[in-house]
Image 1 (cartoon, one colour):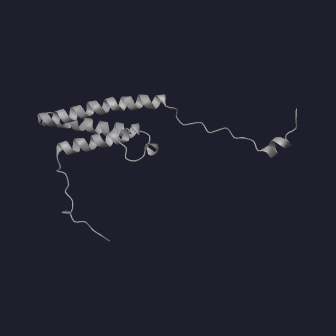
Image 2 (tube, one colour):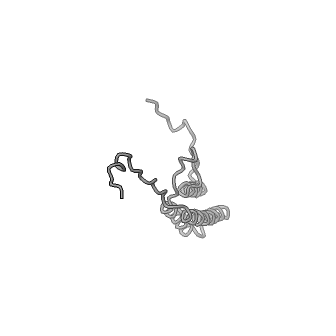
Image 3 (tube, rainbow, N blue to C red):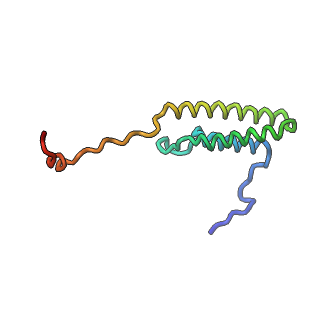
Length: 119
């Protein structure tokens, strides 16, 4: 078994910018905007999960109001504006798509058709 020490890979600094970008990225993933892999494997958007992350980011904005640098304030405001816009877009797109494809009709077997009396 191979263990990595703390010095094997650098971690990003624990900053307000990193927190904001991390939450924004999580919301984008929940909205289906970021996906790694083949398109056929793309998961459906989780609007409930995305809404929760957007609400958390909004709460952080409210709780830190007046204590942020101009850059930090712009970052969180712009992130929330973009996420809210993308949320509405994704929600509208989800309404347009059919909930689930209907299963194909079940065909009767030839033997079952032969057993039915002719009318």
